[in-house]
Amino acid sequence: MVEVSTSILSIKEGEEATAFLELETAKTDYFHIDVMDGKFVEKNTYEKMLENTSYIRRISNLPFDVHLMVEDIKPAIDDFLAVEPNIITFHLEACKSKEEVYQMIDYIKENHCKVGISVKPNTKIEEIYEFLPYIHMCLIMTVEPGKGGQAFLTDMLQKIETLKKYSDEQNLELDIEVDGGINLKTAPEVKKAGANILVSGTAIVMANDFKVIMDELKA
Image (tube, rainbow, N blue to C red):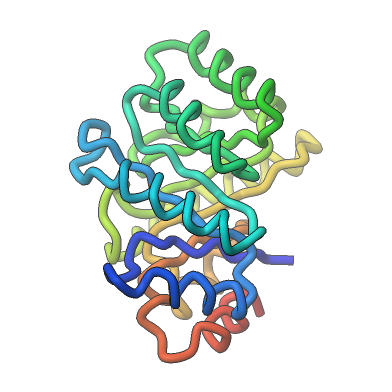
């Protein structure tokens, strides 16, 4: 079963409350929270995402899928644990050592939250293999992180296939999430490659009917 995690990054300012309720009605599986610090990536959404998650938590019980695109991982984990996320994903590239990766995995788990690790397009998928038995999800970026509305990098399909094959061979219980340029054209290819969670933002929030596109993405 494929799930959809809707990025709230592209929602227009002033339309958030209506959009959040419509997304819940449309049965998004998660609210995808793109947390950027202006250092690890150009854009800074940190305070906005703290405000939005606090608001959503007051009106909805849908799970948060928090994607940290930040240099200082631990303080960000602390900040977003307050909104009781279902999963927190941090970037492999933000860690200075393998020891730090394991420390962040343990810290998130100790706070009763699932753990995801994300890899940028230029990072070889093999670099994450040793951590897979200890995490719940791998997030493969199919665009450079930091901006919404980018075009899907088609050569990332091979990376998804490679991870899926490895995960199956090792009998890992691992969700494979894909983020970047996911729409009705790219979703079938991504699902075929092995992803079971699709992050989509622009394609959903720009649609006339959230429910219609949500159903089509999941189909």
